[in-house]
Length: 441
Image (tube, rainbow, N blue to C red; front, side):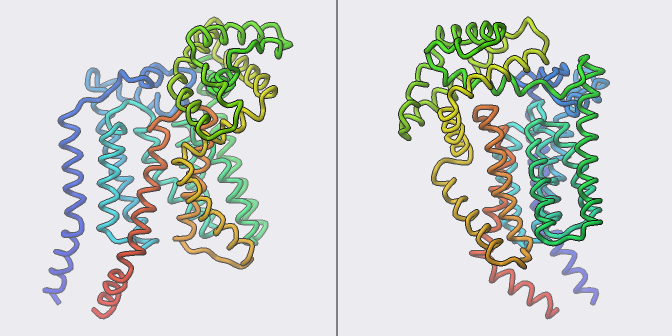
């Protein structure tokens, strides 16, 4: 009996050793690198820019006592929190999907090399917190879809609030809240507990909104959310406006003046000369226009910021939003088709989009054909990957150009999906044999 305990202990340490080595690798990486606090986004967080939600700027401020070592402390906290999030992912994937620890470790190594070492640990940016928050939130969503639990819904509401207060990108989680409630109705959850669950989600949304707006009120003097969306949305319609005179679209004199000034600067710098390609709906033309848009996005955004610099952040966002609405209302087809093209590209291109579309079709067919279907964790896991991939790509395509920081979350769930598929295709028999042996013991 004592010998069996020793063998079990040695096996346990054998399983944990790779993760200890991974931790040592991360420590070595941090000791040989310095935090990057001068890149494009960092100053806006450090200086509490109005376009940023409150959590990460406040997180940076918490370490002001460290003086010149402030950003080094932050870098190490990034690493500690993210490493524990990866350990949680390991626990969850083993417990609920029975994935081989070898494949989970391989996934963690790939995440470390392609996401953590590439930018997430070193950059002073919201991804230092939002990435580990996303990992926990992703698995919580799966658990809430699997079974109705007020306790888990409360945890989910808390984590979603934290991640939204860290990064505006995740407002799409509120869309998943709606889908989750619809799913509970589909599964015939009783009205009373469902009403309590909906109240929990609504209270979390309201609380998050109040916290965000209160922060901006006391810090920046306006009781609204971060005024970032207007100037981001206007870039695409300005690009698609081409070199034609569109000022006659505007009835408001102020909007006309701002739009005219923006378009003159964009035309002078030849930033939208490829927009006319979209007059013909050919994939090759869309590809060329898309490349031009990606290349010139930042330059167009800087023009918008320069033109609207004399007004307050809230006014500039409102003016840009009004210009966007006007331009898009006169070119709805072109704007919609270009958005769809960006959406497909942000998912991974046409082939990967169709790959996911096939799986999505099977999922909806299963729901329609089997009203009493009770999906297991694996099926919900795949469905949640599809849902978050689509929503994340749609949000980024609407507001931004392609950047790895916006898709590290999609990368993570893709790596999890790869580990799951590899396990089911190549390791399922080995897992079965291992489970049989354990039962025999």
